[in-house]
Image (cartoon, rainbow, N blue to C red; front, top):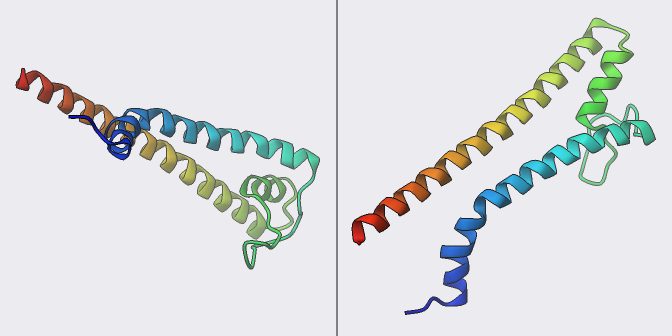
Length: 121
């Protein structure tokens, strides 16, 4: 009783590769955050504001925080920088939370599978 290629991928390969895929996604997001410093040093669209569409110019969130916190002219601009920092921290914290939650769910699934295999023998 063999599995077809699609069944093998769906039932064996993807579940066992899920933690590695999740780790890769987390590392990619970290790399993108790291590369933001390079964007800050090599040139950014300053004062582009909010994009009107996917093809429009926009400022990255870290650049917005850097620019507004460093060169604010009013309390409103400083408050905008703090708000942008809070959004960035929330996004990062949310990603970390869901990554840890996904790891725990996967570990629980593997435990249940292992316990089910032991009961069958």
